[in-house]
Image (cartoon, rainbow, N blue to C red; front, side, top):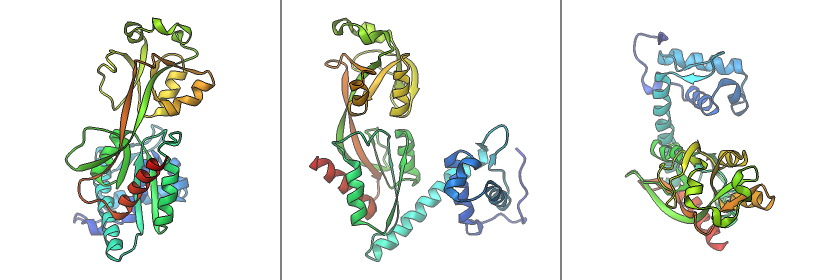
Length: 308
């Protein structure tokens, strides 16, 4: 990969790099391209391109490729992006520490969660956010929806201060608090051959022969004692639902999320008395003491869930 010559013969120290340019770069990566980042940045594509050229010149390396072939990070770009997340996490923790020392709650709180939480009325995440906003009006809350493996990595690199996700094998740098359990049932769509068969014919062998849509973060071992025929994977509930609605696959969904489609007659629960399991959801923090803002949001989530 061709290098971009730095402006001077001396390597730049961290203090020489403009943080604003790094934040532009972060937004481009998060949006997966220059065009998609325009709205969030409030900049024209030409301005964004100029900022990226300036950053690459200051660092003396090519960070990304953009053009007809699409947008992708170079190897150097991936390394800089990973280090940049660590940097921003440290800055956020410093700002939060200053705010706490001053006796006020302000700054930013980055919170991550998996999708399909809005239909879980026992969780009442909307009420928890409302309560948090009243208690910490000066805190700017940022919410991101991502797959569990992305959320776990985000806790480690400082991208998130707290996340809500299914229980995972936690690393040493994390601590977790159980919040609720979510029932997962097996479904097929009205376009699938199993939709109209009798319940007592849905043996494990029959279910195991069907093409199955699993999740990217689950091990491809037996589920409820059945060795499913993994033929598709998805990281989010919406994409899993689309796969199931196609009629080509069966798969698991949260009961609260699939419920409306069952009522419309578009989904059927398969072997619901036998092929079902619970996912334990947790609020996860970095191993060290969470910020006051993160603790306050967690308490609001736990309180609203307990009151439901």
